[in-house]
Length: 166
Image 1: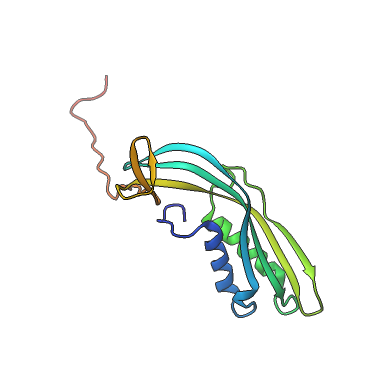
Image 2: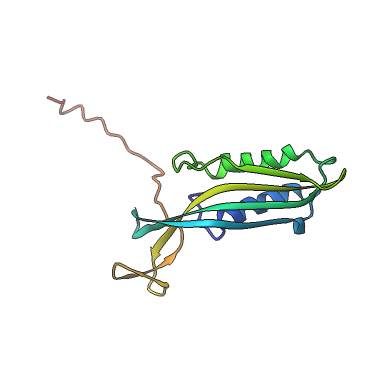
């Protein structure tokens, strides 16, 4: 996910992922998500192509599922969805020392339980040059967007046997 041009936050992406997998067992309007305790850590890393990481946005994400039919759907399926999404889409967790998700399950009745998942997420706020952008920095105007990264598709290796190393 980190190489995509982002239009969604990690929390939005994770919530949509979970809702799409739980649609037969949990109604979309029973899943809610929000952010708490955000910090903006100034960065300034040059990403090439004129782009920069202005800051790292670190926050506590909360995903709440009301009335999960826990007798029909083992809550461990919900936890597995979170774990698998993190493994696939948030591979920098160890580098940034983000904690493991915390889970709370409150049983409402024999038929339903409320599930709350809290996890730390961190994502870059990247800037690319744009004369119409709304961010002015270092005498230039930028817009918030993932910086395109050029990836080599071909490589040429030459073996210089005419001039052996001395």
